[in-house]
Length: 70
Image (cartoon, rainbow, N blue to C red; front, side, top):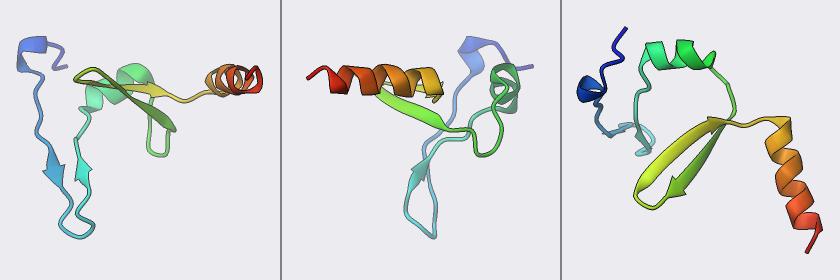
């Protein structure tokens, strides 16, 4: 497993057909998180960092309840 943070780098690539940007997630990370193809992921931008986390019902409920309080 490549868990050495000094060597965990990737590159931003562009899909030649769609023109969309993408980054490959290492297999060991997917395995550690028990993520698989079609896992729903929430993408957050915090400052100059991109955060990924699995979307779940609890997250949806918290955000809906926040919206309903307004």
